[in-house]
Amino acid sequence: MKVMLRKNDAGQMLVYVPKKDLEEEVIKQTDGADGKIFTLANGWELEFTNLPEPLNLPLTFEAKRLA
Image 1 (spheres, rainbow, N blue to C red):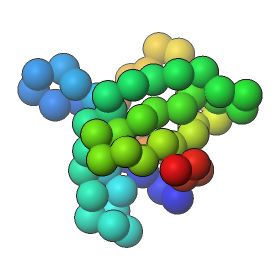
Image 2: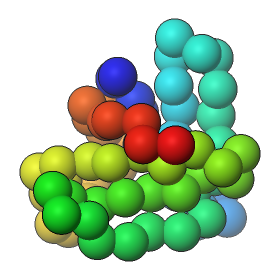
Image 3: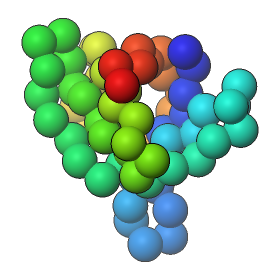
Image 4: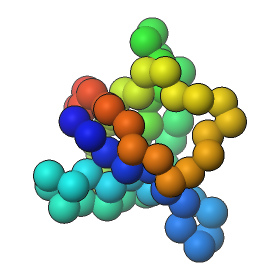
């Protein structure tokens, strides 16, 4: 699914999912087998492959929902 990553005024990373009209804070970042896994405040886990370092936001990425 396509998602947009950005930072809010407090510096927290946010994920926006347009098809669900959902915007949630990233509460945890871990390294997975294929890339980074972001855990959102609502409990969703999204896996991102090929995220650039450093991450210049806002950007749109393809993500895979794990949970």
